[in-house]
Structure formats: structure tokens, C-alpha cells
Image (cartoon, rainbow, N blue to C red; front, side, top):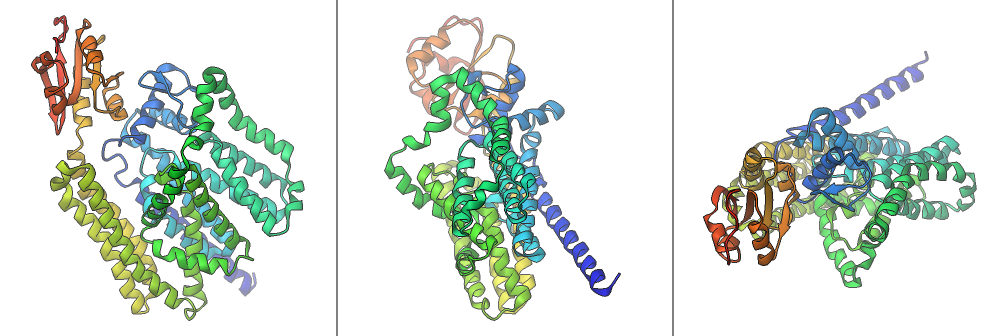
Length: 542
């Protein structure tokens, strides 16, 4: 073996080792105390309950929630959860483990894209950046489908690009496969996103004629063979109700909601990208000036089209802009790679400015969290404030330390300090902050006590407390949700034992007066559970 060949082999082994290190880092962040804390309403508990009802109903096609048909997202995520629950039992850990696994997969594919577009060093840096991006970390630890969708989108883009680069029919076909899985996870919006990015990419490259080399016939068969059967079954079963839920809901929103989404999506994008958010503007300028490169052009198109789509949909949900983060990670990684390995001169001022902006972004995040907790959970604020402050202090100190290291020209240390900051933040959040927050969440302890008391034929009524799916999940029992006092009275007058869960204010106000005499099952914060014994004929008159 010649010296250059030996050096090349060593470099490849080293790069693969670093890639493995990135995946181990991501796995550690995503799985540390993964099962700690009860499921959050709305989505975590709703998906977990729907997956459990797949097994209880024996129906893998129409999702059910609280015993009723539920036209939510397509079923692939719930199928994964149901499989984990069937194999290992339903728990917080089994509900979340698929998100962690696909989160690691998404980091790995991001590394590969960065590697193929800009080289192995950019690939490794991309993985570290994405694995330590705040929103990506949090969603990889929650029992929600977003990370699975993004992993399939990344795989579809990677396969399409390899097909384009190598004129490979097999890679094009794999892109249809992954697009079908993305559609079966999130819905038709995924194929629209892919087309809206890849079409302009070919047009800008003056390569639209290459659409003819794509095996459209076989590709369509693969895509429809994966995505279409479920939609066909649900259309046959649900008719217009399913069609409206699957295809029409977002476009019924008024134009004002879509315009207002800009004011929501920009802060979500900025705060979700902590601790890398302040590098995003510099990266956009960097790649715009290099848009003749395939990787730069695809990063720009993906970020722009995804953000425009989030605004057009007007959903005002954090997951609307979530697909941006892998491509922004690649964009920022290339900026850092050129600075660290190809000369600091031209980019030092850009990065230094970004570091100081980052301190402001983190301070804004701390303020946003403080305002949110104060407005939504004023009663719990005093209890959780010290533990919350500790976690936020870590996020503030970390970027400040990296700015100091950068100023001292310790550039590699400055970069690595940001993933280290996120690792410390997650450790503090899940060992210090989460236990305190969990002690303030009322539903699991009340539902657990109620589950212990339930017997066949018992009924549960939730009165004017919304429809928290976590209460259904932790009682493992159907709940009748009521908002009208007369309907409540009729239900309480029906024979049989009834458990009533409501707030203390409603119990003292709009509930039938006899309900105050029901035996007390439990009280947590403002929620009260009372029991009407089976021998009582009526809940009393109001």
C-alpha cells in the first residue's frame, strides 16, 4: 500500500470513528432518563392512547381515541408505538423510544448529507449541531411523530440526490419508498414539500430535462403501494369526514391566521435552534453566495420552502418549522468547517458577531419560558421557579463561555462547548427540573388512584376540564366528557357507580349540589375526583 493510500485509509477510519461518536452522543442525549415524567397533553398522551386502542379494538386502520373514531395523522407512528407496547408493555419509555431511535437516525442521515455535499468534516460537525439543537433534542425525547417524519424526508432527499448525481435508478426508487413512508407518517404535505424543493432545484440547475430519467412508473407504484392503501380504506370508511380531516382542515383557516403565523414561526425557529440560532443568518448569507454548489442550493431551498409552507398552512405549531433544523445544521456546519480548517480570516467577524447575538437569543428564550409559565401555570410557578432557573442558567452560561473561548482563539473548544452546554442542560433538566415539574402535574396520580379503584361497569365523567388524553391513558378507561350541567345531572342520575373529575370551582358552582356529598377520591391542585356509589339512585337536583 502506498503512503497516500495508507493516509487516505486512516482518514476514512478516523472520520467513521467521529461519525460513530456523534451517534453515541445523540443516543445519550435522546435516551437519558427517557421514561422519566408522565406523558404530556396533548400529543404525547393522545398518540399513546390511540396506539393502545389499536390493540384493544383490533383495528390497525381507523385510529380510535376514548373509544371513538379519531381522524388524526396517518397511522405509521401509532403502529410503531403499538408494536413497542405489545412487545414490552405500555409505559412512558415504550411510548417515546421510537422517537429517540429515529432521532439518532435523523442525525446519522444529516451527517451523510453533509459529508456528501461538503466533505466528511462538515458531515461530522452537522451531526453535532443537529444533535444539540434544542427543539430537535426535545422532540427526539417526546412520544410524537415529528422526528420520524423528518428522518424519512432526509432519507428521501438523500436518495434523490444520489440518483441525480449518479444517474442511479435504484436511488430514485428508494426516494419514492421513503417519501411514501413520510406520507404514511405525516400526510400528503410531505410529498408536496419534497416536490416544492426538488423541482426548483432542478430548474435552477437547468436540469429539468433530467426528470425523464426518473422511473416515474415504478416510483409511483412504490409510493402508492405504501401510502395509498390506508387512505383508500379510510375514505371508504369515513367518507367526507375523513377527507376533510386529512386534506381540508389547514386550508380553511382565514388569511389573517396565515399572516399571523409569521410572527409565531420566526420566534419558534429562533428559540428552537438554540444554541445555534445566531449562526443561522451568517450561514444563509454564506450559502447564498455559494448557491452554485448543490449542497448550498438545497439547504437554501429547503429552509425557504419549509418556512413558506409553515406560514401558508398557518397552523402556529412548533413542528411546522421543525424540518428546517437538519438542513440549517448542515449550513452552519459548513460555515464552521471552513473557519476551523480552511482559514479564519474572512469568517471570524461573522462568527464573533453570532456568538454575541447568541447570548441575546438565549436570554430571549429564558424570558419566553418565564412568561409562558407565569401565564399558563401561575399556581405552580413558586414551586418550579428555582429548578427552572437552574436549567436556564446553564443555557445562558454555555454560550457566554463559548464566546470567551472564541475571543481567546480557542476555536475548537468554542465549537465543542455548545454541544457540551446542551448535554449539561438535558442532564439538569431531567434530574433537577423535571421531578419538580412532575410533582405539580395532577393527572397521573389522580388517574392512577382511580384506575386502582375501577371495577367492571364503572363510569368516569370529566366535567369542564377539557379532554386530557392523559387521563384516558392512565386510567385505561373510557371517559365521558361533559360541559353542560343538565347533561351532567342526567349522567349522574343514571344507575351504577360513577367517578366525577372536575375542578373545585365547578364543584362549588355549576355541578348538582348533591355531588358535593359524593365520597372524595383525591385532590391534586385544582382537580377533584369524587365517587357516586352504585347504590345512590340519582346525583341530586341542582
